[in-house]
Amino acid sequence: MLYYFFQYLDKTLDIPGTGVFQYITFRSGLAIILSLMISTIFGKRIINFLRKQQIGETVRELGLEGQKEKAGTPTMGGLIIIMATLIPVLLLAKLDNIYVMLLIVTTLWMGTIGFVDDYIKIFKKDKEGLKGKFKVIGQVGLGIIVGSVLYFHPAVTVRTDTATKNIFNVGSATATIAPALAEEKSTATTIPFFKNNEFDYAELLAWTGDNYESYAWLIFIPVVIFIITAVSNGANLTDGIDGLAAGTSAISVLTLGIFAFVSGNIIFSNYLNIMYIPNSGEMTVYISAFVGALIGFLWYNTYPATVFMGDTGSLTIGGIIAVLAIAVRKELLIPVLCGIFLAENLSVMLQVAYFKYTKKRFGEGRRIFLMSPLHHHYQKKGYHESKIVTRFWIVAILLAIFSLVSLKLR
Image 1 (cartoon, rainbow, N blue to C red):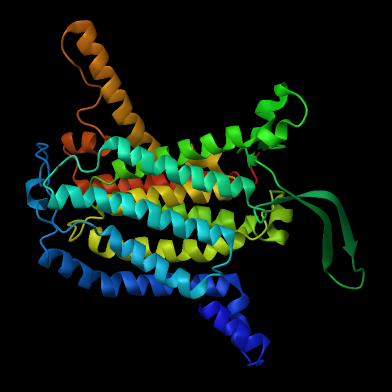
Image 2 (image 1 turned 90 degrees about the vertical axis):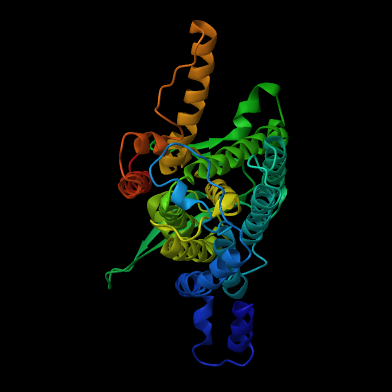
């Protein structure tokens, strides 16, 4: 809203200084400051409200040190993250940008699913919350929406270099690079760490004959559904100890913000020789607000937590990360960038599969880990949760750096 207001002041009234709102970097900086202020200042009021309404966590007895003390801690803190993200976005972003609209829909959609789950757990006294099949239906529904928009919407395009001229001004130290660009609809994505690293999902249908590109949505949309479901569940499983999900997510989202900025900037994308995605740079404003909201939430969520995000927050976080990665054509980098989510997911899958296998084979179930998800395994080994969280953050930072290196290391 403020973007359009200052655009009017700049273009119509020509007021000096108002043109600064045209710059993504300025609005992104403003967004992160505003979201930090909202999440820290108003976060306390939301926590007090949740506590007053007795919206507290019912902690299962897991035999872990300090677990009982967490019972009654306010949950649904994901509302803080959602509010602190959407308010700056509505004020500072271009709301007619298709990527920003998709991210707003994702936030509200996944936030609603998580809220219903938390509501059932707390007010209906059902520890299982929303039935798994309904969560999956919600995730699949969002995947269909996101996949369809990214595939069919005319504003979602990529541009590839068809020719490049280097024009040097001999009398100065500057050089102008003028690429000739062809804009096109495409289901191409990036394969990290490989030269000529663009892969088009449509190629999987090349065997069907001519005009196979017209049916690429049969591959693309199911891939989007799978990624959104997997990442949102991974974030949900990671939310098990104070500060773990919010901290690791902030690191991943910040990295995706760098990808969005360079992919949406014709100069940087040309220099880095990566896919140029028109209009995607506007996601940087959303990402900045989201990172600020996550960091502000950590003010209250670090050990000992005074609020939990609940599924309202964790499912929302996972959905947003998935959509961001798909939008900037970096979804194949998710296993690296979101390695913590992957490890948590795999630990549960392996634990369940091995337990069922050994129970069938030997008559008694055996376990690979002392407890799953993975962070509980380390708690069982006697590590304090603050140490576990800090080390997981360090791993997440290393994975983020490794992901960024993929821009040039091929």
